[in-house]
Amino acid sequence: MNKLKEVLQRLRPEFNKGGKYEKFRSTFDALDTFLFVPGHTTHGGTHIKDGIDLKRTMFMVVISMIPALLFGIWNVGYQHFRALGIESTLLENMIEGSIVVLPIVAVSYMVGLGIEFAFAQIRGHQVNEGFLVTGMLIPLCLPPSIPLWMVGVATAFTVVVCKEVFGGTGMNLLNPALTARVFLFFAYPAYMAGEYLSNGDFLWVSANRSEAIEGFSGATSLSLYGEKKAPVASLWEMFVGLEQGSIGETSVLAILIGALILIITGIGSWRIIVSVFVGGFVMGLILNAINAGLPIKEQSIYMAANPLSHLLMGGFAFGAVYMATDPVSAAQTNLGKIYYGFLIGVFTVMLRVWNPAYPEGMMLAILFMNVLAPLVDYFVIESNKKRRLARVK
Amino acid sequence: MSTSTATQTEVKPKSESLFSKKNRKLLTDPLDGNNPITVQVLGICSALAVTVQMEPAFWMSVALTFVTAFSNLIISLLRNTIPSRIRIIVQLSIVSLFVILVDQILKAYVYDISKTLSVFVGLIITNCIVMGRLEAYAMANKPLPSFIDGLGNGLGYGLILMIVAFFRELLGSGSVFGFKVFEAAGIPFIGNGVMMIPAGACIVVGLLIWAQRARNGYTEAE
Image: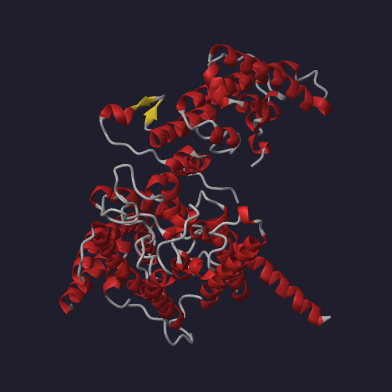
C-alpha cells in the first residue's frame, strides 16, 4: 500500500496545473482520494472537529446497504433453487445469487462511473462520490432477471438526464436511482412488472418456467394482491425476506439493520424513515375502514389487507430507508421531512391499492414527493415566519 | 418565452433580388440560430404530440410551413390596411382560412395521416409560431421577405420535428418512415416505451437543445 502511495505522490506534480497530464486532474484526484485520505485540511478559524465529507457520507450509506445486498444475493439463489425444487446450502445459494447479481452491480458501476468521469473531465470539476450510492441502489431495486444492457441504458439515462443536466451531484431534483427504475418501468414495462417474460423466464426469479417444479408461482405478493388474491408469503416471511421481489428489497430485516446504521451515524433522517412507515400504516387503516363501509360486493381483499403487510411487501421499506432519505431530493426542514415522509407512505399505499396499472406505488410516490419537497419546505418556512411574527406583535 | 423575443422590425431597402444575402438569412436563420422550437421554444405542443412516427411529423411540417408562409404573405399584403386594434382577429381569420384548406387537402389525399394528426392540424391556428411570425415580422415587412420568413420558420419547425420523430420512431418502434430497420438488419430489437409517450419527446427535444447550445456556444441572457 505504501508503494502505491509513493507512486501516486510522485505522479501528483504531473497532474497539477502546468503538468503534463493536467487535463486528467479530476480523474487522478478521484483515484487518489478514493484510495487514501485527502491531502487537504481545513485552515482558518473553523470549529469543525470531524470533517465528515461527501466521500465518507456516501461510504456509510454503501456500508448500510451491505446487509440488503448480501441478503438479496442469497435470496436470488434461494428462490432459484426453490423454483427448481432442489434443496440447497447457504454456499450454493450465495454462489448462484452472485452469478446473477454481481454482473448487474458491475454494469451499473462501470457505466455510471464512466459517464461521471467523462463529465468531470470535460467540465473540469472533481469526480463526486454521489454515484457510489446510486450505483448500488440501481441493482438493488431491479428484478434479478433484468437484461444487463437495460441496466446500462437506464444508468446512462439517469446519470445524464437526472444528474448531469442539472449540474451533477447535489443538484438533482429527483432521486437518480429511482429515475433509472422509472425509466425502465416505462421503457420496458414487460421486464419490470408481471410474472414471466415472453421466453418463459420468471421475472422475479432467475429460472425458466419450463424447468420450474409444478405449482411454482413467479408472482410477487404485490401482484397477487393486485389480482385480488391473497399473497402466499406470511407476514413473517415478508419481514425476513423469503419472497420474490427486486434484488435488495425483499428483506425488511436486512433493510432495518441498514436503517439503524444510517440513523446512528446521523446520515439518514429518522424523521423521514419513521414518517414514511407511519404514513403507509395510517393509509392502510383508512383503506380498511373504507372497505368495511362498502357493500359486500365491492369489498376487496387488497383494501382489507393488514396495514402491516403494506409496510413489509415490495419495496416499501427499501424505498423508505434508502430512497426517500436521499438528502438532495428530500425536504430540508425538520418539520417538512415529516410531512414529506408521511405523504410518501400515504401515496404509496393509495397507488398500490387504487391504481392497478402500477403494482408498486413506492417508486412513483417518492418521485412525486421529490418534486413537491421544495413546496413542502416553503410552507413550513412560511408558517414558521407567521408564528414568529405573531409573537412579536 | 414569448413572441417578443423574435422581433425583427427593420424596414428593407427598395429593390432587392430574391436571393440576396438578407433573404437567404431569413430562410436559414430559423433553421439553426433562431430556431422556433429549440431557441424560441414555440410550438412545443404539436412537437410533442405528432412526433411518434416520422410520416405524420413530415406532413405536419409541410402543413405548418404552408400555413406560416402563406398567411405571412397575405398579412404582409394587407398590413397597411389592417386597423391595429382588430389585427389579431384579422390574422386569425387569414390563418384559419389556410388551416381549413390544408386540413381538407390532407383529408382528401392522405386520409390515414390526417386521422393520425387528428386535431393537431386544426390546432395550427393556435400555434405560437404562426401568430408569432405574423405579429413580429409580417405586420412590418414587405410581402416577399415575409413569405420567405414564414417559409424559413416553417422549415425550422419541420427540421426539429423530423429529428425528434426520427429518434422516437427509431428507438420506440425500431423503424424509419415505417420501414423496420432493425428487423431488416436482423438485429433483435425491443421497443423503448418512453419514446412512445410524450415525455420521450420532451427528453429528446431537451437533449437537442443541449446539443445545439453546446455547439453554438449559446448562453441564457441574464
